Image (cartoon, rainbow, N blue to C red):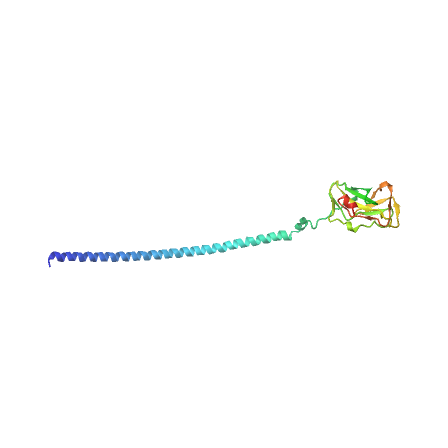
Length: 232
């Protein structure tokens, strides 16, 4: 074998050895870099997870407390004010007082009506500057009668008669039976009208100065319409 051939083989062997060593070193370096990168990534991921988990849990817990406390407190405050407020009931009107009409600030007249027969119409007008109510029925006393004229119970209206200033309420008066079946008939010349809740009487002039009454005489509840007062 020639010297040139031996040298060529030696060179190839040396090159191969150098190449193998270089590849081994490169692979080792890559593995080390990958391992270090994995460690760093795992550490960073763990730190981020710990940080996020801690903050998220803390944030959620805190957010829940912040939402629950004001909501509960607000509901209690609202309930306390609306449920326990004394003014609320009064504002609702259930405890509001009725202002009855003052007989001293009312004008009253009695007139005959053509139909039905033996009926009169009592008209009461509110002359005050405030709204008032006519409660129940007018108590009528003819001359020196010991008792007031009975009320016709079936004439009770569905609502209280309330009068604004200048407005009027009405009551119908049956003076005597149309068929003459009544008894103890007499002619009267004086009429006194009492309003519910007052002992003061209003003297009202009778149409023609006098009227005939018997024991069938009745008066209606106060009505807001004159037709309802005489149509019964």
